[in-house]
Length: 532
Image 1 (tube, rainbow, N blue to C red):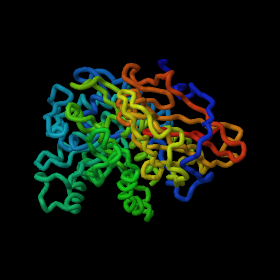
Image 2: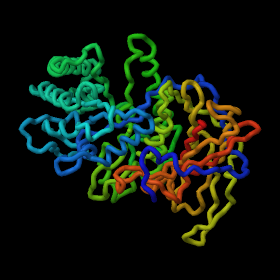
Image 3: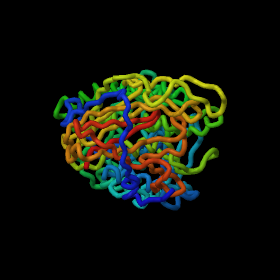
Image 4: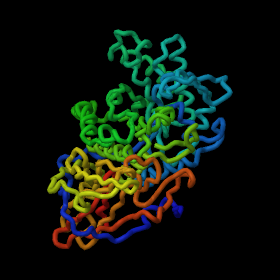
């Protein structure tokens, strides 16, 4: 394997490729110009991260007390910025943030009392934690933060504690890097903390009290422009209780949870009314709707406690495919382990590849970027390249090769438009296959009908494709590659070319009608770039 500089990693390994004749199973005809079903313009840094406050120092610093910048994390964040030209936002918060006390006299940067599911019962921070964690050396330039301040405490010092946190955060972050303060986290589910009669009206009244205190105690003294919105409110758990969002299960159940496009659509559809409401009035249309903690499955909870019982689905290729589909469907309307644990060394976990893929799909175009789900037309539900049976390499048994499901239950497709012109196509094959399956990896064959000229490209120019894959399929928790590139801890998060895996592959367009034919293996995703 060769280590590559980040700027050229995805430009190498280009190969000419023409899919052998095969009957297309799936027909896709993306509109050349902006689809009526496309999203509003998507921010380049739509792919961003939520990190629990009790883990934030692990992601940003190294050393027993966070003495040095974490270069591994910085390189991975820089990789996302290279894909979109904008650094991702980071939201630091969660339940642990709502349980945080700021202690000036504390010697260590962070102290915590363990609780259930890896979420501390209490977290205490000193001011040095802020100074070290938000050091500019930890991040690529242009990064912004949403910082969660506590609202849950209900004692006489609660407001003073929240003001203290806001002051320390502003001193360390600065007004230019602060996107917003979030006050509280999922307050209405605090059984035993808030009264049983607690309502949204009570929440709003308490939120306003803390909001006013932070304005007077932190924002005004720091000279921030009060005409700008500095607060994020209504931090409800909402969809997080759904099993398709937070699940621990073996790979064999991935199809019912992560690798399930229907579930993703159903879950995100729950926020359509909220988004429509915000767009219905000039007084609300500029309010930002933030999907926070969508990466809770692989950055918030301490999943290592489950390793000896079952294989966590959060750390496998299947969850990377879920991440891509979730982000792109959400746009059409946040991934690595930074420190050693008792069970594993620092590593790039599988869902990070989903973030990188989605960031590449959104791209770095400086004009409007819009995304639309694509309709799928099924022409044949039999996997053309395979025979009926194959021998198990481990035993002498044979097993029928199941037909690929090529409906929207297992296939997702998206078009990405730049300044109203078709630029990229995303294909995701959620059919499950893993390295112990007793037959070769099946594929779905796609015919994508393109016009003779697309943007800057014509039928005489091939399109470029990159595939997210792993040799062990849906259950793989290592050896993932995207376009033949791997990211890992041994290279401190820098890209590394894997010679045995195809890189950027050129696919010839039909000179007759401009269409292309491609294969996407089970438990794989493909990004097709139509540019010249």
